[in-house]
Length: 633
Image (cartoon, rainbow, N blue to C red; front, side, top):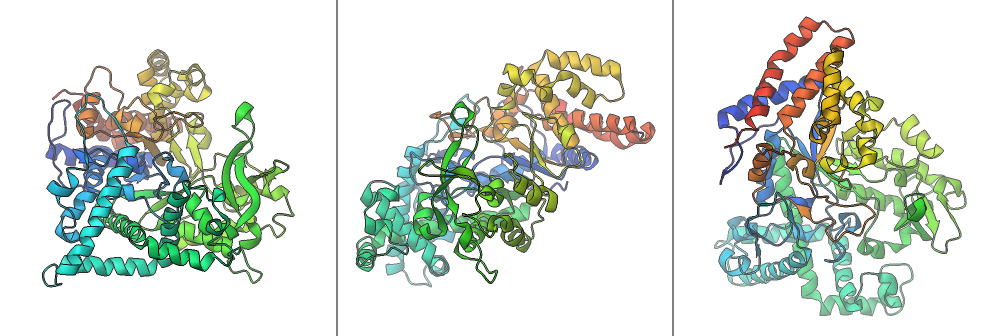
């Protein structure tokens, strides 16, 4: 795996934990991480961290942003420790402060909570805001804490973002009215960019802005509860009041709609700036194309969805029964036209993919089954099953054509190999899905070591992880009896994997990890690096945070709120140098994986002298830096 360039970045308030000197950083990357990754065959190391999880600033609106200056400071830190990408969650607009799951966010519009308002105090943004007069009175001041994590405050975030966005827009209009272009060229450059953005995205911006007004007027974003005219403004059921209603909304709420569009412009502009920054670093962001759609997207595109049906899952609900996800289903009869071109549903799916890839470098595809053979149920409760079992609904088997005629060609257009995305295939495999996804296209999936052994997927192109964004941190997993006693975490198995040529060492190590949960967790991550070329690590695991980002299926008030604190580097190094470290010491884990791989190669017949000659220096250097990171400052 290529280790990208890392520029110098500020390190402040070093109170705990030994950090590497600039000279050591170079040696660490060149003589420890890179040769370890090369021998192990590691190509991708991605940190799972959704957008709102990004670090606190001294002051912020209450949630993190993956596009601001703090994100730009985090990237070099991640790269220093071997990561070459972040897997973000969906980055679409949230409907409200009480519906904060990113998996219920919009597709066509982005999350304005991710705007870095500090940037609006600079010349590049025409000095739209003042730090002292505009930002500081609104933004939340984050207090230093001994905890190695923080929680997002979505109530504050929505309130602060709304205030600052209105202020920025008003200042934008005012400054344009009394400034000449020669006096403030950056302001007029910003106006030109804004006008071009509105022209390019006119329809989806107008639809989203109107929906934003209507949900306030109607007191809910559930458009099925609206009056007939508002509900059907964008459908084939438009009535005689439609045009007058649209005209009224546009005239009466023009400024509110313009502020909304300006917010979309700003967040998209900062996404592009961040993409340019990442390109310079050689660092990637992985987007997340959610299987669902937001209420706003569904309202604006009602005619492309299958009437009377929703998408779900056949298991995992009450008493392990059906889960009703309440996700609209694309109408299979509208996926393709008779001449083979894309129908309205197909065009929407294509645009959905394009939106997920714009300003991103790779993609996580949520619930791959939903693209091939979705499990659906009728709202009246009379029918349920996979689309492939309902020939009246999909008589031309159009869903079976989606991968090869929409998804894979779109990836190819963006220069993304079909094996690169994080294909979420943790599904009930139907015969149709088996045939199209695995047998014909040989697509990879996810190996989750929380439940599986890595050896069962050797040679696959899967992304491998211990836990996902829905998992407990590994140090919490291992406390559960069913995890500790599972085959995936079996001490004899892990000891054998990591000690292939010395039974005595394997026996001693087995006893060690059987009685020490922290050591067994290290062994699990070493197993991952040893047997997988594309790996993911949750931010909670890497930083040693003992809280869960999202407890799937459980209504926890802290779901989706966990984030890094404003002293995340101090917290990380303090954790590593403590008497009870839970953060991942990357060189320590890589040393275990590298030694395990070397022994495995020897056990398979590779010449021992050559293997140890090839790995001795790297093992020594990894051990050196593993011990340095354990030193106290």
